[in-house]
Amino acid sequence: MTSPIVHQPDARLDLVLERILDVPPELVWRAWTTPSILKKWFTPAPWTTIDCEVDLRPGGVFRTMMRSPEGEEFPNAGCYLEIVPNRKLVWTNALEPGYRPAQRSVARPGVEFSFTAVISLEPSGSGTKYTALVMHGDEEGRNQHEAMGFHDGWGKALDQLLALVRQPR
Amino acid sequence: MTSPIVHQPDARLDLVLERILDVPPELVWRAWTTPSILKKWFTPAPWTTIDCEVDLRPGGVFRTMMRSPEGEEFPNAGCYLEIVPNRKLVWTNALEPGYRPAQRSVARPGVEFSFTAVISLEPSGSGTKYTALVMHGDEEGRNQHEAMGFHDGWGKALDQLLALVRQPR
Image (cartoon, rainbow over all chains, first blue to last red):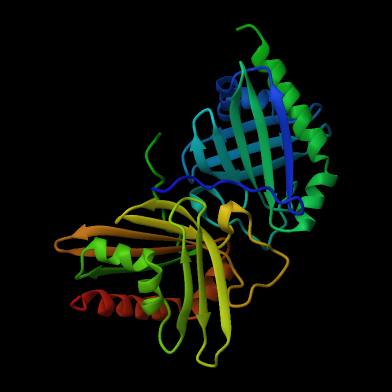
């Protein structure tokens, strides 16, 4: 097999969140791939993630159910594409579990656009260089995602992740 | 890593071509993954495949350019998802190379619907049990693909593949 794909961000189509975290990649990885942990940080409060399913293999399901402060529920389902433990996690909502293309004709509540997320974790001292690259198919999707508060939302969720994994266990 | 996904065909959404071939999996695999060979069989005559690009890794490009008998050209680009040499090849046009979701807002000439193809090659005596499972996101896509002549087209292309790999070299 040849070397893995290197992802080149495209400013016109992509959104990127990059930060140096003071926790090691292993803890971030666990928070991203363990449903009971993910539910506690994945959605910026006062939104909550009330359900989560993780089948950590290519084509396996990544499903979450978010709940708005008003009690409205928003299901999201996609599948994993690449899994490099403690280093790289790629998933998309453009494909359903098993790689089936997501249905196009029905507007999906909550998420009206498709994206692929590449979560990269690179050791940095005793911490992690964290990069979330979110790729869209067109500018409309990118801009809609940005307007929904991508930077604030993904940043706040990451703060929640950190607060959680820093807790003494 | 856990075991690979097992694909369950859904008659409502999928199209399947299954045949026992009298050539071994290795020859079929080579015909599917070598551009110079693929160009000779991929489109049922009098259509032709005038260009082909293969980057055989997850997220790598699978691109073809078909030409109609009238000289009209139809580009198709997608990416590979799973590669198990001589056994299983999974690719989709729902994602562009690098896993970027395909653009939704622009009708793509030639292919108006998304699909994921799972080509399975299972040794069967000295030959191959060949299964092409083509998954769609909705019935509309499946039915459109069927009406375009899926069974006849994929079957005829497979005949061309066989005629080609049976040739003495």
